[in-house]
Image 1 (cartoon, rainbow, N blue to C red):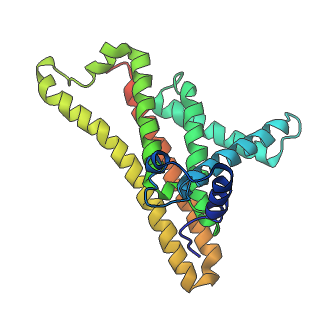
Image 2: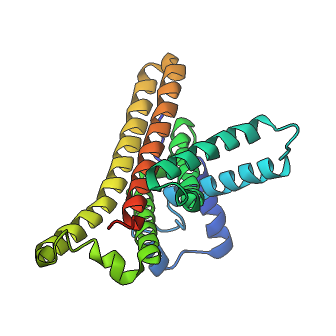
Image 3: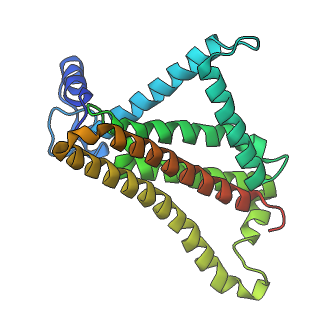
Length: 248
């Protein structure tokens, strides 16, 4: 069943209200909560924080139980995932260079997948079904690959890729390249938001009518969470590859 907010929303905000009092106007404006007195945190912030805590605890448990002789199922799954991400970055970004970007790509993978997966738990909400979360992710990816390109090639070398193949085209190519790079932020954010929001809403409505289709819808939901995660990290890897490629 679809819920507008998660089960934690009212309880956590009531606790914060009791501890801290009424949130300041400036805080509510920054959180996008104008006209909503008594609310400290919007639901997508609570859910995103829960994802971070959940992933941190999951990795901490895996680290404490790490064993070369008798690996646990969780360890084997994580090793398989990290091996796949390492191969992905090596193939897309380049052999010998992709390994340096595995931590960032892995962080995106864990956060986006579990954020999407939260939409399958009826008392939680997927933070990626909110544009604030998806734009934060796309802006992070945008800043990361541009900073990586500047560090790899230097400010002048990196700026040259915006000027086109011949120098006299740069008045035309620079605005086009800037617009195309900024469009990546919009594309990454809206693609992830649209798919997760639409899937979460449709699933909630469908299960309200035909609840006996829960197993099938759960399977489709998990597949959708995986696919959307893969698309986001693949495109981010492609953007990183273009930024650090020396042939530019």
